[in-house]
Amino acid sequence: MSQFDKLAKLVGEVGARGEPNHPVTLTLPSEQEILISRVFDAPPERVFRAHVDPKALADWWGPREYVNTVDRWEPRKGGAWRIVQRAPDSTEHPFRGVFQEVVPSKRLTWTFEYERLPGHVLTETMTFEPEPGGRTKLTVHAVFPSQEDRNGMLASGMEWGMREGYERLDDLLDRGA
Image (cartoon, rainbow, N blue to C red; front, side, top):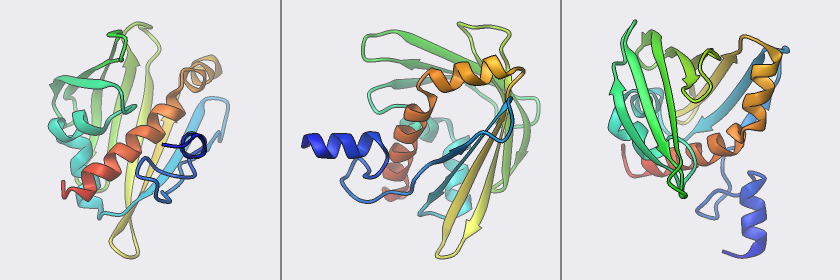
């Protein structure tokens, strides 16, 4: 990969395969919110399934160099979830939460907490909207307990991890998942 390709990938203009991708749109509607949207070239049923199937989720969630282990995954109201991401340097990043709403192919709401910073729990709602051509617009609405928590998430590299994760999800969907 050339230096230009690396730079373009970093700023989200070109995907990992060197093809134009769908940009991630990130806005800050209030001091305690993040709103993210992204279009995928697959229908809502498939994009939703990739979010609730633990094997599929482990294949795409987060940065490319990270390996995910799904320790617990109960995609139903009140069900718990826990994922551990292992970075290239073997550092583990454990996340957990509780599913609050699961509406197949339409909406998924869960709490989200980084275990190494307990007590900072946010709520994420993901909506899966059909788009023309069999595509899906995914919107993620994250509500934080404070502006400091929101800003900490932004400073953590979350946007980079999400962009790479969505590129990985593109790859998974291209393979028919």
